[in-house]
Image (cartoon, rainbow, N blue to C red; front, side):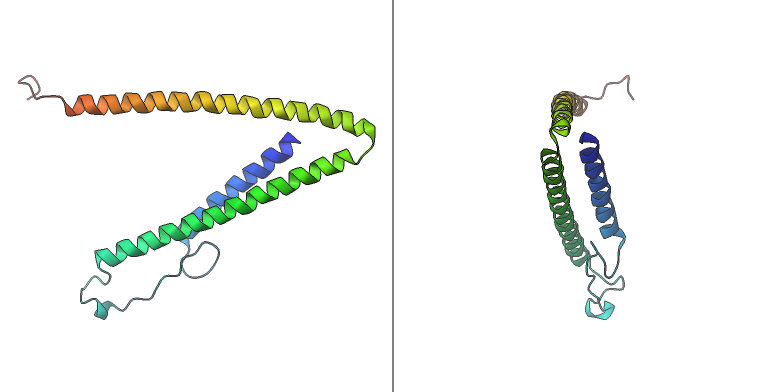
Amino acid sequence: MAALTTVVVAAAATAVAGAVAGAGAATGSGVGAAQVPQQNDSCFGTSGGIRPFHLQNWKQKVSRTKKAEFMRTAEKLKNQVINIEKDKHSHFCNQKSDFRSEHSMLEELENKLINSRKTERAKIQQQLAKIHNNVKKLQHQLKDVKPTPDCE
């Protein structure tokens, strides 16, 4: 059962990554594609076409569109995982009692794996925080370095 959940979550991550990548590469219509307004170069009065301000606004709109599409896809995939979990539990709970004992063992193993992943994630986050702090300290030390005759 944990494998099913892992496969679904992996597929969800792949789909979300594809949606985000597709949103940046798509021009025109399709999932994740931003509608690109057709600009007339003559109305801006510059030889390059779009002014930097308009380009920045367009990039912000595309970024917001990508974020919104990512959130919608993530929510859909989260709901799919919830529905699959419900189906899994209802299927095994409605079966004969011999399946229930095996199902309970699988649930225990799944809970152990979930807990181990949580603790591993916490450890990794602590390590990342330490690395981040060390990088910040190094940046401050590099800013405070004064030139000496030896360096020149």
